Image (cartoon, rainbow, N blue to C red; front, top):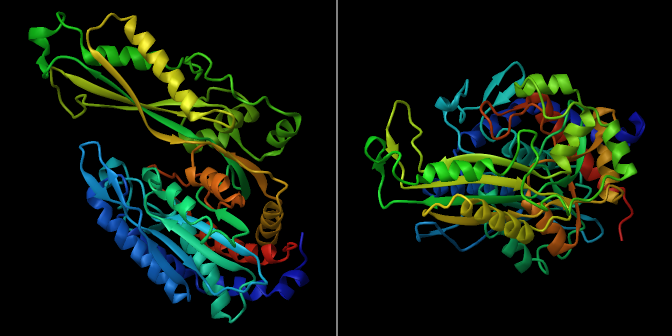
Length: 483
């Protein structure tokens, strides 16, 4: 761990002081960003994403960055309509060939949010309560993106030279699958990414109150299961008991996917999962994670497993299957005695390293058709996989992780936990496969931030200390041997 003298010699003490003094201004800027409802799930609202990207681009320009709004073309919607995708920000600050180059990835789109969904506050009005900053995007991912920009701003305000070259790649479609971004990465691999040494992502959270570095994520195969029956919706009093109902078929098919213990029932789905090594086993034992506190944060009374190690392994290194909803079914308040003519079930499988999405798709499709055939129903079954994102894993001995650990030690005074992420951040695997660069995730979100949920928040402390962490990370990267 660095001494106070070493930190002072790096100029970080002045940087940290500036960040503390500017924290109210930083919070105000986050409030302005949160106020833009950049929900990427609805193409009708993509104008707001473009507005958010323009605000972000303007902020980078004030820091002296050169900004390109790279075109991604169009996306064909399920109804056949073609909709133009929001652009991607590719930006670069002034460059010194003697310094290593860090590329920072982030996104400024958000998940849907409505007050009536159960939010205590307006999701698009950043509200501070007991040191927490509540608002959609505060943690995922507008807060971290701003923290990176504020770290740059702190160096510039104090006229300190930034220790590394910095590039930004910031998108507005991450929550909707990052359509087009993988193609852009390939197109710019020999140009924008050619001089990049390190790529860092801050789009996830800690597992406890202790800071962490993230070295792996699960992938995601998302499925639609469509069952279509008669040509129109029917009255259950007239036709109930005399026809094969699409909803009944769908419920049976969905019920065949996973048992009450969370075990996936699709044959051979777990075959490719890598065995647990002794080194990995020890890593899980050392992670700080309070099961009882986690139950309280989640609002559950019982998990599927009893130990910390089992819970974390089933969140990070084993596949899981979750059922998300049924389209076409009656869901509003009140009663409606209808037999829907067509329903679409939606579920996903979080996959882990060694699992191939194309193989998962084949296994799922064959299994569901087999289950459906056993029902002898005249209805039509259709299985599609609109999202396919591979898992990602990094080498924790990579030099970038050394810099990350040192930065955490400098700001928080502890060694970070090395953790994985149960959710999917597709761009990490894409960056790794296409560019071959060093990838690391450096989260600043708290374990209880409620990403994607009601009352999403980031604590003021994490936001401000996270800004310091990013500033320290710039310095620590510059101290690594640079070839």
